[in-house]
Image 1 (tube, rainbow over the protein chains, first blue to last red):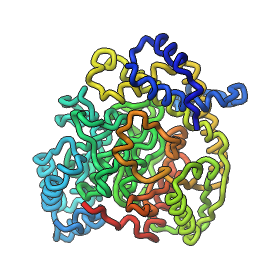
Image 2: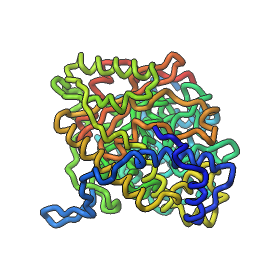
Image 3: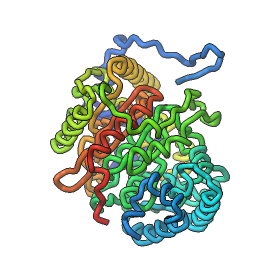
Length: 68
Length: 460
């Protein structure tokens, strides 16, 4: 599971400034915990190790497009 | 009204309707009376449509007299309040939409209507399917019929509570990170999240386009199969809707599961699981073995990245709500507002990387499902949380056993497999290959018939 300490309060405030949104001071700890936990798998990831190729769209033999 | 009628299955109601010893109007009247008595405590319903329900029940009686054999004819259901209903307010559990009356039905609502169901009303949902209503909210949250001090799970909270309390026979739910299966687990009922694209999302409020699923909730697996049947199938109004052929979900129930291969990805799904839940799950596996299934451990290493699903969910939720959040922030529940705003803080790169992790989970899971027919896992890590804990704004999203199947889109059935020492339901889930809802339902039904968990009733 994530260690919310990996996202500092300073980094969080910088993200809030960049996004142009307002989050009240008394909710910052909650947001930091939530975002920190969600980001943890990415911080553990070497994105170059993922070999999948992402399709934008697929076409069936009948010519119908799909993004399933 | 006797519990016998309140908790009757679809097959039992249908048989009694056709024997003329019970009518849809009698059942509808009885359930409306039960709702009037119990819902002031449970808060499962946000809108009751008694008059139109009785009109639909009378129409069902007429159809029965004409020999109509549709299995859902006269069956009382209700919809999660993110499903649009023509002429009936659809609140999304939010003050923002508190008085909104849509002029169209969601495809699922249309399809259950066409199947002859009696629609009793709208069931409370967590606000926009994402945020529990905190004290002081315009809409109070539903309570768990097994213990009123505990949440019924979410976001299909009213659906779970109403089914457990015998207020409806079937309900719609939606599942973005477990919102059908969580309430099913916490309320001791059955919930099916079909394959992504199997059941239409047209006319259902969005939480996260790439993770949202619609599906049925009921008290038995067979009832879920009956309720899925009309929902399944292509809908041009939902771009994710699939043209894959629709199976008969009811007829194969009862066929044995000898030789069925069931994989258990312990390395992810058994971590952090409450001891009572783990014990009930192991007993469920033993029952499946006794019924002839071949159960063995499997590995899906990429599941360790599952929690990144929240980046996808929050970024997409913010994209959907951005304008309303800027124009009417005061109409969002305070904690929900900040949760959605967190989506604004996710960078494009992080969203993309989360989708790449998702692709890896999909690829590895598909490989494993070449070697086994189903995956089994505990649905929730522990039984229902007390409100006192859930009302703590700092209460974090725990590791989820349900989210992997929103990431992969695989059909997943949650069903009861025991009770905790405190008397709260415990559940496990069975997941199958894409569009193999039939296999999932068959295994679940066979397990259910060998156990009695689904026959227990809450003390309401």
